[in-house]
Image (cartoon, rainbow, N blue to C red; front, side):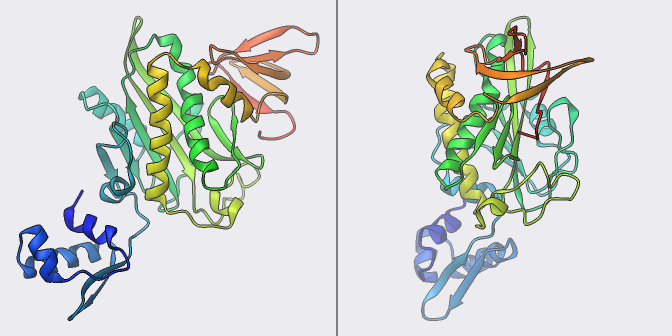
Length: 324
């Protein structure tokens, strides 16, 4: 992280003299002034007074690596951040980085996605400066059969972070976070594997954060944290807290501990106990979701009592009476 920015962030709301900054950074006061102006150009509100020095009054709500890094409390996730102002899809860029053998935990973030997508190639609404659009590169040494569980665990990590901010999220199997019956976050997990060896996994998520409106065509099924709480969220800090929660769960997952989280996933399920419609290719059927199995599959009971396991990679699940 930029040392000057780190000092200003730590002393936010307080003055620090140009002389002291010059001494700490080992540069001239003129150089300090130039770097202060460079930060201002990036959106940092820095006040300057001749006798007092410089004071950071407000940092921009941007997903800049230095800002996210200031709040980050992880060992692996987010220690390398690739940032874009605008991008087609964070997952696509992450794939290229993974193929290039980047470090595990590298993330790609963007202020805007112009080609954001979800499962089954559905589009994802990704307006600029309002949401968090992030892809995480993971390299778990686990069998391919264990990967479908990962999406739900990533969802659990996001849900935990939201809970700590007063939001009451539920997890819609297999890859959505919902609040009050509307989608606030979508998760897309993709992998490269050969036989039974996983080369890498890309888990991308789009979280509607400070959106003040949702387009009419999706307003009945989508929402944002702001619309549900009436509060704005500082995105760099929120992303850092999400990465922390995901890392805690992911570390345990790599050690083989999925069952330790399954009860928590079930307790936050928006799907269990609901009538659902399962679409698998050309086949479609309805039933009641009764359980999430240790394999990560959704157990569905038909009207005649027959039980069917739905796998996340094969089906689309919709609530019969609405989105969730």
